[in-house]
Image (tube, rainbow, N blue to C red; front, side):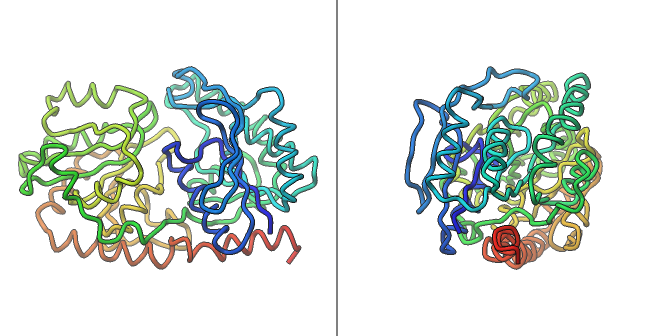
Length: 399
């Protein structure tokens, strides 16, 4: 098959959705399909490049200002003259048979869905981010746009929608009413690159000794993803482990987490590493004792389990998070067996869980081994490829 993968974000951009679309593109290319990628040109003019046996088309784009409404994140405007016509040419000259789009509310999504529908091509949509905001006025505006523009111009016009977890499936049903189009396929993990990772180069870089306990927290910080609960739980943990350090890896789009650390006088215990090259992530995982991600209660009742947490589990690290056992619907997680689940924003739960894990190395290693086994069996690219193949075959060949 000739498949076109569309995502506003694609490496070298660093984000979970960029990595997920890259891994999927590489895997379906390795399976013998022809893969064309359409994405934004982060800097400079439009480009065509070869990457991992894929042809990557980078459309001309303009970076939006870092606005509070856009979470102060790096977002690109592709609604520029000539881009729609270029997408049509890419689909036509590549003899594309199916378009797989990541993200439901970006302008590149609108352009790609419009082009694909005009050419009567089947469309698969993967939604990894809910359209929401921590500030009520913006959140209300997003809800209106989501239930009108996105619902009727995107969600109701695609053939299949991929839900990566239960929260996303519920969101799609409530916002778009597209239950019959939903297929559950979780994020895929490149398991091999996270096994036997060493953190020898990371600890000296941040002035850490071998005696220091290290908790790693991964993810870009913004006005809807913060470090508040982990930070507030930290004083209780420091009473038992005064040498504990938290390494925070991810871009800072909002300074509230940094300010909270300052207010609580925890600057010596929390190290904001900023953006880290993806090739270095196995080393950071190798340097830590455990991982704590997404512990705050968001406005949409939870963050779920993202690709970063799954990659940490693939490395054999215990992950502490605020998801639920049915996060992946029919595949149930087992608390204190392959993951550690706490109530969101409950600093007491978080503190007790961290102290217990840091006090018991055997427990950490046991949960980590079970986590690695779970990811290898159910979240590896190889394990998930057949599910994608089935969706593609159904739409292209009617099987």
